[in-house]
Length: 528
Image (cartoon, rainbow, N blue to C red; front, side, top):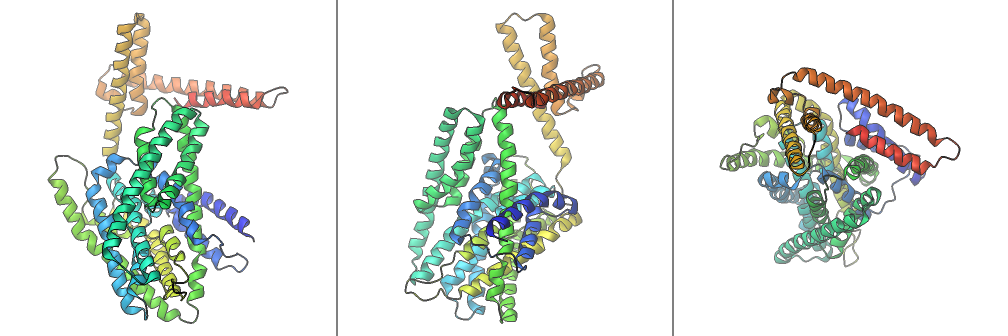
């Protein structure tokens, strides 16, 4: 088996793991990691030859961009306190605790190298958290906090990692310089992210075509990451800034085709890249196995100690942090749902899985220092890091669904239905307001005006069928049945039209491009 065949096998596994995971009730990233582990143990499967310094630039930008598309700046600001406590403060605390323990138990490990180990195992993986939380039906606010933590903790951890590696390689360390680097990295990243977001927004208006616009969204995250890194900024923070800017300002409500196609495209990218990323994490297990040859007992003990520190620190931090976040929210004048009970705290604690970023960072540790000597205890660091990744990702990932079910932590579906109904009312009222404006400007026949008024009402009913009860309209149930019947008949009519157009595609003299264009119009019409 060569590298290309291995890549296609991972892509196939990424697709298959989604329905298999749904049936087994397990997260697809965990299944892909297990697949990677199995492949790593097979003799005929080659070692992965992707340079470690390319793993993050190749995998993180699309994964981060896809994750941000599912959230909004408003959600981040609403949860900024718990996200800060987890994504910044907890990363610092975990890094410090791991560094102290690793420096004490691993003979000959300098404090700078121990800090690098702490930084690379400190951040829970954003992709794992998003994928796992999204499949378990957790409360929306919990998912938002986990997503926010996963997206922003890499910014803190990667900067700490680079500072520690530079100190270990050069043998010198300046706390003032490290603090300045952290601030400058964030400032540069935000500036690059905003500039690229603004430029991409303007360029999308010029492109016009949905295909070109979606293609641009694939390039922009990579450009943002690489450009920020070139200017010594945080590539992760730059991608997040660009993605949030585009999510807020590059959305045209009337551009239905781009929105539908873009949503499908990014779902595909997210599924494939996530699968490949976690498959690579499993495949890289051979590095850890090779380094532990003849020293299994000793190195497993070190790895277990660091795993214990990582897991215990998160729990001990979450207990007071959730209490503090609850007190802060209690002083604010809003009625957001705050999942701060002990059950939710336990689920958030057990959701701290490490993954792609940790694996890429440990493999990117230099082989030598500036004086030409070997990087201190590099093999030991690789083994310990992969021990943390496997223990948290596989063990926690496999048991998290059971834990969530056991504790009964689920989203409030009644509340979600109320929000959906409220949005349906707003949509219907907006349609009615626009109808009144048209009636004031144009002389509409009474019959046409009544028909359009019913259509405005139907907009809300299609979103939330219960809306009719609130409207207290006479004969609502009859109208709903009539609406469903109309939609069924219209669906069958459109189906017949699509069959006829597709049949024309194989006829002599037919232009496939014209046929596909007509078919696209019919498909969009079917979704309305």
